[in-house]
Length: 286
Length: 347
Image (cartoon, rainbow over all chains, first blue to last red; front, top):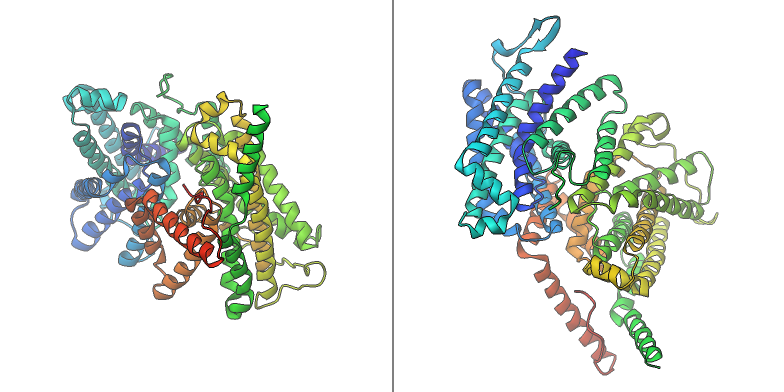
């Protein structure tokens, strides 16, 4: 029971790191980015190549995955995404789904369609027992890393100058622009950072979520659930939503394996009907 | 006094709009001529016809009511399974009756889910439609003793149409059947779209607030068109099951709904032919690319999508509209009539 809770929290934390970039892009630019999972996949494959093929230590592979994906995200943002911000939601959906298809086929072509595994150092394998609860060391690492990241993100968002600019831009883009905040630049940096986080999440999660070319399609719905259920106005909303989703999904798969994801989708629909703006959104609708 | 003049004007306008243009007639003559023109290609033609019908259903809600949906496969799939199951257990053996019943089942499902979909913003709608399709897929997977689960529904035996026309191996009868169903559904959809009801839908799409201010029941219009569209999608799904005598979980997949959006985008939204033309182009593109690189055709599909969006759909529809106008003018001149055709409806 507690082991399920533990696994669920680890899973949820992972989902949060994967999806928080998406929540910012959606909140800031009102941009529906279905291709977010593609960046996560890029991070995962980057780690696989670095660690397995070039023998880079795992601890170094993770930050590198972050960097590479962040660069990639920044590049895509400047060259392609910029043109689509002002378009209708339909265009955005089409555009990003197109990107997903391309990334899936491209990875399939270069890396093959089989599932990839990252070689994890021996020290991180196995379980430790604390008060009768079996906890995987690797999952413990995930919780630690993601927990630290969440705290860091919260601090950046609330305490730094950049954070306040970002929040101002999310709250009211036009006024923020009028006050001299370069919303485009803020957004570009945030997008790159969010993509980097997704990449890091993909690298960390390769072991738990599985990494194959259909990754972006398979987890797209999960990211979107986190964002729509959590709301886009803060990072605590998506954080709580992803923890809930993680626990719910692990528990659901454990107790009612045959119903699989049904429970998750059902809960999502109920929540969206009940609170279209998200479970933890502020009551003032935008 | 002025009221009657206005009513007359409006009805004259509606009639003028609804008139079949020569180009449309030519389109359908050619569509039926394919039965004799391409005898070896029935299977792909049949798939195209089904896809066209499916795309038509999406166009009704996307192009005319402005609802973005990633879950049209929900209706396609459930009606497909319905048609397969009634045929397998011999509940309704006549294919045409089964088809109509499947359409009603899908429409009922559309009616029920429409209340979920009509709330919230674009993103919420996207998520709810997608969620409904995925849920149905999970249900079909769960009750694999009925649906066959991942192996698909097997042992479906479809009786001959009207007791006479058997679904043959070459797909000749199957194609003719699909084409006729497509035509009938198209005519109905065309009638709906060109009616005052269709006009009110356009106003709802343009500005829901103003539409409700002039007395259009926005919510019920949306419910009605969503239900209707679900019914059409269901008929398409049932056609697929009947002509292939098979149904698998893949009918609920996200790829299917996403491809459908692509079809519609290629053809253009908001005029009924968009779905049909898009389906033809898409199928032949897919066939051609799949021959070149069987495994990676998804890449090229993605590339097409990205390019279309970057170029801009409005611009491309502008090209299509001007091309249409040119052709229609030409056609009108060839029929030796004064070229006073109404401007094309494509926005």
